[in-house]
Structure formats: structure tokens, C-alpha cells
Length: 306
Image (cartoon, rainbow, N blue to C red):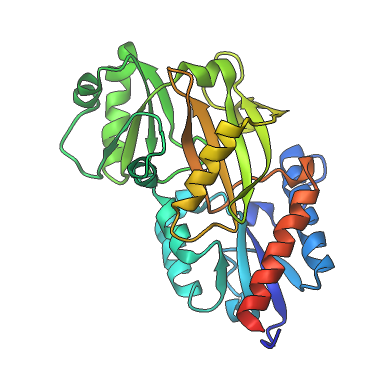
């Protein structure tokens, strides 16, 4: 590769996960995955570093490619993040493609998927500053159970499950969030509590491996932050086809992606999230997948710089 930058690939994290914390299982899992990818990239002959996206002194012109891994604070600092992203995309090459990143940040992309014939949970998009109330929107939806979340969010941040008797209490929270956030109201699918959510990891648009995430009894969130548990899972062909269909309508085929699938009230799989920015990919459960992604990155680097 002809470019003389000292680093081929930078793995992006946030400042909370720069250093190891022995005994902290959450952080240990982050490093387990990143170590597998770093080892695989180095085996491909690529020079790597691991850096917080908001490091104040890092020179982004010193890396050829930057790949988002655990930048899990970006949605809480979205304005700062977007300014950094706009500046930094002029200095290095982002993986995935920058257009995919900007498209995937706001969950309005779900309606783009629906336009292409991909099933998604029923939902309503509410623009920031809209003159409406939670009671009015819920009444118009005619659903019995709801999930409310910001359009830019992750890890169930500011996400609420409620029934009709909770509308009045949550109404002021909704109005406060709506001052600064675009919001999404979705019909709650009982299958999430009963069967969980599956995540299909995709590399180069093709299926790699999957996991099943189950909620803690009495909760609605599958994330381990809230007591959710992780299980092995073998998807059927219908689920794989759905994930690969989603990859094909992204504009640019994602180098890496996670497709989260739940089941609607008729038992059909539908896409609840399409994660193209910083998805957890569970390399530690399928170590060969880290080598697969590293090979794709090596081939991309060769195509750009050779």
C-alpha cells in the first residue's frame, strides 16, 4: 500500500473503554472482542491502534481507515459527534462508508427499509418540536402497548415501555424529550418478552453468525445492561434472507452490520434495528468472524491504496 501513514486501521472506542478494568466483566468483553479483531488485522499485515473517537490530540490524518467499534456515547453527545464526524471524514476513511453512517444514525432509516418491502414493527415517527401529545398519538395508533424511544439512541437509552394506564405519567417526559429529539412510538410486540430478539452478524453483506438475546423476566429490554441474557442461535433461511435483503438496499453494501430481528403478531420475522455504526458483533463467540472481517478490511485497503 503506497500511502505512508503510520497506521492502517484505528479501532474507535469511547473514553470509558480506553483502559482495561480487571474484574469489570462488561469492559473485559469489550476488550475480548477488540483483541480478536486487532490480532486478526495484524495477522493480515496491517498496523493498528485503538483510540477514543473524541481524543483531543489525535491526528486523524495518521490513519488510513477508522472503524467504529464501541463508540457507545455518541448518541448522548450527538451534536459534538456529528461535528467531529464531518471534520474527520475529510482526514481518514471510515468503515462503514460515511454515507451509511449518516443514514443509519437516525432510526427513520426503518421506513426506508419498509419502502423496499422489508417488514418492520409498526411505528410512528414524531419530529422534534411537533405540536402534539403522547395521549393524542397513542389514541390514534389504536395499539394496547407501546415503546417510546428517541430516533437517535442506543442501548435502550431514554426508552420506555407502557400501557394505557401509563400514558398520563409518561406524557411530560415525552414532551420534554420532544423539545430536543425526534421520537419514535412503536407498537410493543409480545414476542420480544416471550422469545427475545435475534441478532444476525453480516460481513460484506453475507451472513456470518447469530445470537439470541432474551429479556429478564418482567422487563422488555434485551440488553445485558438490564439483565438480558445471551444464547447461541441458528437462524432459519427466512431470517437469513431477510437480513441479506436489508444489506442489498443500503446503497453501499456494509462491510459489517448487525441485523436485529423480532417476530410480529403473525409470527413473521421483521427488522427491529439495522446496526451499521457501532454494533456489538460478538467475535468472542465466533472468533473466526474477526478474521473474516479483517480480511475484508485488508482487501478494501488494497483496493484504495494499491
